[in-house]
Structure formats: structure tokens, C-alpha cells
Image (cartoon, rainbow, N blue to C red; front, side, top):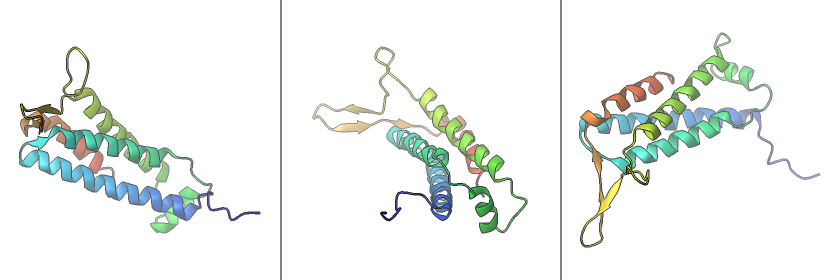
Length: 149
């Protein structure tokens, strides 16, 4: 028999989900706050969309038996509705990801995202979003952030 390193333990699953939740919350807050402070590169919002998708992949990966009870024990809260809180967090991440996808400016003909242009010298020139353009984005960010304490 070989060492079962490919089998995820309850501890590993909890750590992965918890660390991902902390990181994606921090990332959303950073982009949200930058968008409130002034124009931000459109690519930054596209990168956040990808980060949210990757976080959701971690959140929805198969889980070992006993993870719910393990989570309650780690937080020392037997009344914590782990499944409901987790589902709310993941749904908010998906909603924010999908909002970005559905509202990102695209070329009318090709559907290509409009994130950059090229100047006459061939240099990439980042397009930006104004603070006003991302007002609804920030509302979705706030909804997501509120799901993680």
C-alpha cells in the first residue's frame, strides 16, 4: 500500500475552504475600495472574476465526511449552520462573478471584452472603469463581503 497523500483529510478541507474564504474576501475588499477611490484598470475586475471562480471551485469541491461537525468544533459553535452559511457565501461569490461577466463592456460585433487598446507604438494601454461605472459592482461586493465574518 502507498501513502494516501491524495486523500483529502477533514482538516485539509477545512483549512482550504477557510483560507480561500479569507483570501477572496480580502481581494474583493481591495478591488471594491480601489473602485470607490478612483478609476481602476478593467483588467483588475476581470482578474477578480477569475479569482471568484477559482474560490467557488474550492468551495464546491468534494468534501470528506464529517466536515460540518469539524467546522463547528473549530469555531467552537455547535449552533453554527455551516451548510447554510457556506451556501450563502458561495452563492454570493457566484453572483458577483456572474455580475462581472454579464456587465463587462464587450465589442458589439465579436463579443470580445474591452479591457485594453494598443497605441501607435504597439504599447498596451489599459482601459479603466470610473468610480461611477462601478457603483452597482460595489453593492455586489458588499453583499459578498457580508457573508464572511
